[in-house]
Image 1 (cartoon, rainbow, N blue to C red):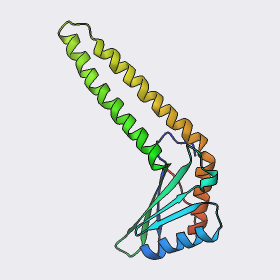
Image 2 (cartoon, rainbow, N blue to C red):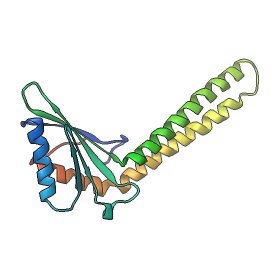
Image 3 (cartoon, rainbow, N blue to C red):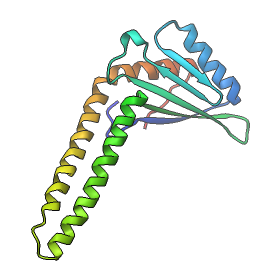
Image 4 (cartoon, one colour):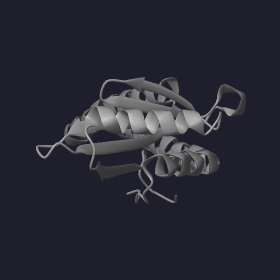
Amino acid sequence: MSSFGLRPKFTHLLELGVQEARDKIVEKVKSDGSRCEVKSFPGFVCLRIPESDRHYWSPRLNLSLDATDEGHTVIHGTYGPNANMWSSFLYGYLLVGSVGLFSGLLGACQNCLGMTPWGLWVFGAMLAIAIGMYLMAQFGQKLAAQQTFLLHQIYEAAVGQHVEIH
């Protein structure tokens, strides 16, 4: 799973109804023992690493189950960190992006007015922080690769088919 994306994904078609597909996945995962935890809601299934094996970068697999016109199910799977980890990166990018945008505008205005464009220094620092956050996310993704692969194997065993990640 070598990916430059922040959250690897897949889309998969099962020739079952939504409820049947959900039940099949949940029952198969539960019957395999405690290799992962499963949470199930209508139209949604979440596979997580057990608490005893979980670390800061441990992934989870969120499965969104949508019905097609033919009565089949399209499953959209997204691998990512736990919600608290994802939200900390989301808010970090939001903060860095906002400060970077306004400091870049300030620096450009300062430059046009012939002033010292110190806002561009702040913009450069925000750009460096954003790149650092991206590299940290990639590092965390590499630390979680083995557990991500395990979750993917569990999903493939549950549906009985090979599924390509993109």
